[in-house]
Image (cartoon, rainbow, N blue to C red):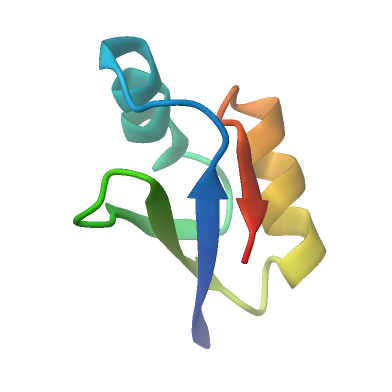
Length: 71
């Protein structure tokens, strides 16, 4: 397994509903961990690079209802 970290910027303010969507995204195939940045405006997503490409990460977040774009 090769772990890779990718940074994303949230496109809406962090609230309870978005926190729950982020918590649920931990169960997505290939996503190992999601860390919310200290500013609450960015995410660091750690993935298994043998299972997901960089472009797949953003698409998976969007499908999970997490409005984030790569930075």
